[in-house]
Image (tube, rainbow, N blue to C red):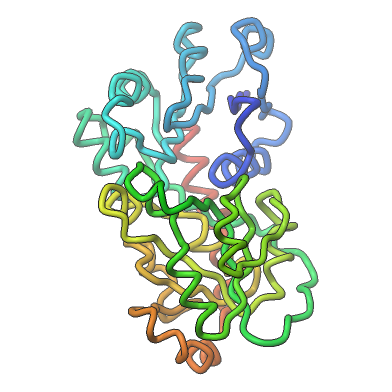
Length: 313
């Protein structure tokens, strides 16, 4: 089976795009080809049996649709949940998909109900890390209490936008106030307000081993959402990379207002911070967490048989 992955050249191969492509490549080897500059001619020349396209506002599904090649939609970001303008493309994309992969059960329920899409043609593939990205020697721990956050960051004037849950200014200020150093690995260019409040910026690193190893030097990682009224309900339905990425780094996960996905790590490789005023207790609470029991079991390869059956049948 030949599989074409369509990821636009202007989109970083991070998060779901990185993890899914690597997973497919590991399973199907040279039968998988990544297309960044794609066209009808390129697809005709490769002659794939199926094409993998991604959700959100991406329109790459049009290429296999024109060629009448079955495509699998990796619906990693359900646009219509926060932008009604996305509905027309989403409907075409969903209803014409041969199969759909979701990152969360809530997204799966929503799409299947909204478009009457057959549930048996869908699966949930969690954004766990690949076991190959765990093979590194951890860095020496920094002295003191050090919090790391890797992901998107927005300024305060974005609170009412569709990504308002990524405004972390107040949360980071509280950690700093209570004696923590806050280290940031932004997914892309980030507002300087975070530097102004005392956060420490680090270079944008690609998803995978390099990022995980760099984060291994810190005390814990933060998985959280700002309580933005127009977007936090959507965020709560997601299963973000951060549910597992700090585990991959070998450090505990601190969850504060982190949504439904917190159930995966609470009382396992992480804990819940219910109030920011409870930050002073975190050092003591983190001492009781032993995460290495989970690190090599919470990997994307744990769904290998399920994915192969889903794709091949």
